[in-house]
Image (cartoon, rainbow, N blue to C red; front, side, top):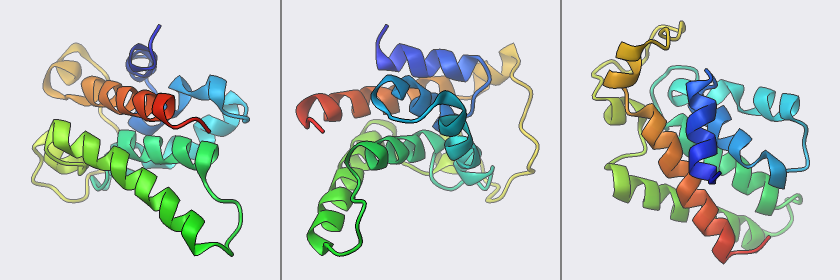
Length: 150
């Protein structure tokens, strides 16, 4: 199963966008599933349903941070190289989807949404592109990692 398919399946199981992307890469990460889920739990709905940066884009950032991120604050070059990575995958997502902002991707006018997530019904999946968006993020990330060994 591809990372795209894994991420999409995790979303369909009820995980948020960030969690779905992070879990798709769990086999590459040195943390247990529970820790990965907790670490990425706040980023769904564009950061706690504030409808800001898409959770799947945040999920890419979490995975890239765990795989490539500097673990030391002394090197501006390492920070810059890491931020370049983040920008590269975010730009790829934006190029494919038109934005990295949750509310834009969902066509919402509300800037901050209620904290309670919507029920995942058939209608939910028909009106929300989130399944495809987490798939796009996982696909972009898988391609990045394949070209940039960690």
